[in-house]
Image (cartoon, rainbow, N blue to C red; front, side):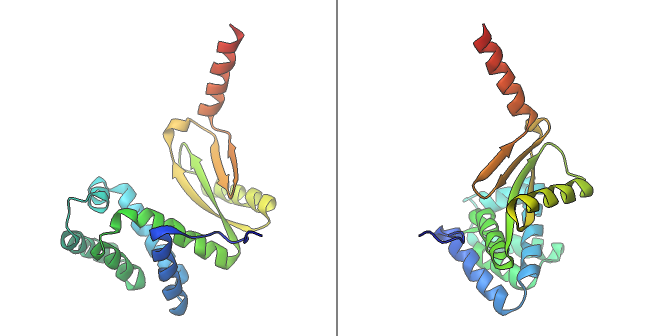
Amino acid sequence: MAAAEPIIAGMAGRYATALFDLAQEANAIDAVKADLERFVVLVADSDDLARLVRSPVFSAAEQLHALSAILDRAGIGGLAAKFLKLVASNRRLFAIGDMVKAYRELVAQQKGEATAEVTVADQLKGEHADALRAALKSVSGKDVDLDIKIDPTIIGGLVIKLGSRMVDTSLRTKLNAIKHAMKEAR
């Protein structure tokens, strides 16, 4: 019989599990998660930082030196900063997005929460995010953490992935369905 908990596998999963265990011992699970989330936002907002993280051209020493300055300036310290520096020195910084995702899953599992990947065309307002959380909680029976991605190409609506379920109410999908229906009608 399959276990109900998600399997965190691969290199990113091993790093995330090790970090989670250390954070649990230090009683800093939420602080580490917040710092990692801030770092992911920094990478998403800066093309130069994204290039530093993903490019194999930079040596481990160069990545570590630049990362140390960025973490200090962003106010990311403690266990999360040590983890990010370790990842950089081990030449695994390219996989930090997967590591953070796996860490989020471990935190959600420990708290009895579910994580929903939500893709929207524009930033959700607070009350809309709260309403979405409440609707997903009524469906899943668990508190739901939203992992919101902004993708203007969906034009409008939402794409929600919660566990093995997916709901696509995007305008792009609806327009494509109409386009195919019109082609078939000819």
